[in-house]
Length: 186
Image (cartoon, rainbow, N blue to C red; front, top):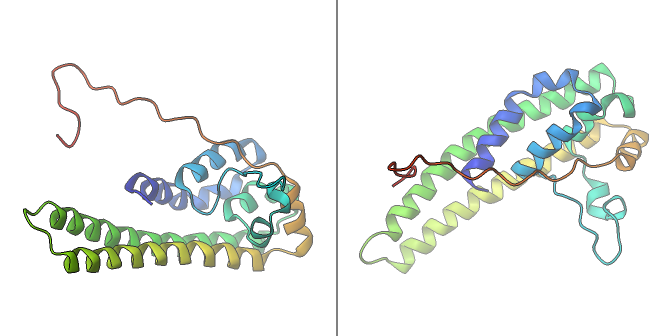
């Protein structure tokens, strides 16, 4: 995941308490943010003629934001909503910590690769540290989805599979830099 992904994740998860009043009208907005963040939600792809609702992996996992978005449609109780929001808050804290560590390790890798000579052993060790953090991030995502799934009844999970997924986000607007000014990072 890249830095903008983590920024979007932080923004969305930080506002999870605001999702308590979410309705289906907000589904597109939340879906766009989720897709941009790639936090377990991806635009469904038909592989070998199997729609996303029939994909065993998609059926086994529950997107926390989808459960909150369609709370009324699936009959989510107040206690279920609170439990799901707690799971999102827990994941948010872990994501923040891991994002900070990943950012630091990525900066270290950048410095390492910009040296005149690079030790293969050092580069591989640094890559291992980065990959370990990325693995931990994916584990947090999976655990959050599994824990949310445990809070839903089978009929609620089934109903959620029948509801439409939000469309993919539009491409980001081009960066406008006034003439005569350097782009950020230059």
